[in-house]
Image (cartoon, rainbow, N blue to C red):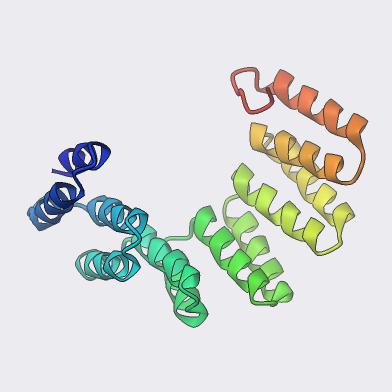
Length: 203
């Protein structure tokens, strides 16, 4: 049913797509991902209250699914409901600590003007998932925005020594370019391209 719903959406038959999502969610063997897909569909249709309703229904059925909680938290923040978003993202981390949820919560706190709290959340995420390149990029970018480019470099340097990934070299090079160090950026990107020849993000 979920794949049929996606096909209907691609064909522009949104009413039929919605019906297929409803049918998929009603199935006995439905899993939490169905509700996430359905909510994403409603969000793309700019039906935010309906997307939130779908996520709530999914969480009622799958209360231990961290991704549903994170999706609801992210959507609540977009609606300007910061307290609700913070609660949902915190619950997501409590249910199952995952780097994307740490990043979402840290960035929420940054946007709310709580830089100290944001930094603590990034540190907790780093401690839990030290190999997650996008988290390191987000943390380093946060420090750069906070006027601490040297701290951002330290994050990249430490992470690349322990768990080098293409994301890290790309992010580090972008940081150096923003700091006006084009040659250093070029070297980092070349190094990343050599270390991860299979990755095309450096091209």
